[in-house]
Length: 271
Image (cartoon, rainbow, N blue to C red):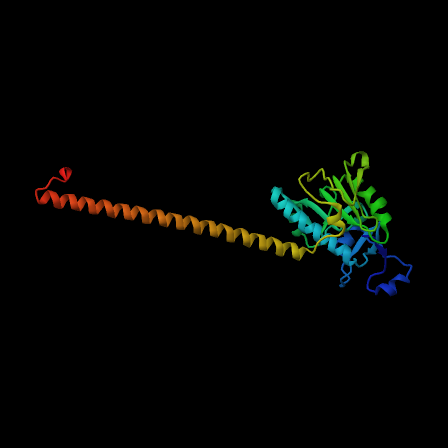
């Protein structure tokens, strides 16, 4: 998502008319708090406010977060998908990607800190995802160069306007190789080769709550079918037990008859 340099402690309309810029060091940024709900990046030492996301932007990220969390659970890797986590790309620059995948231990370490959640140098994520907005050049040029420079293995640029997804990989010598995926195509991730996602699903994602509801219904149907199978198996066992009981009773009656005949001096084998 693109960003606009603004002065904190003001409304957006008030700050847009200002020319002064708030300069912070990386350490000052980590401890900065203006007691608002604003989210800020640190760009070349400048405090930069992040614009409000569009509904489609939020929907895309929510869907991808859901898909990646489920996929990581399935492949049982020690990775987590998370948003609202910063990434330091330069000594005075912190980006706030829309979504990242990082090692679980990195997240646990950051959770122990009382400062802003930022992956510092040496704590790079495996995957960074950005959904383009007004200033798409940031995502295509500046962020792409910064993420490649710190050797983040994979970077996705999702462009709803152009209906294209650019997947950048192999950040050797600080430069990505990339491939564009268009509508009707399935994206290919080197990090997650088993991930099955189409451009259409990402650009026009379903409602996550509906997916959860469908999964719950499928789970309930599976449980019902399993219960029915168990019931049928129990009924078959009951019938088998009843047949065995009848056979045992017939055998017992036959043995009693033989004993009675013998008691009366009759050889049952001669009858």
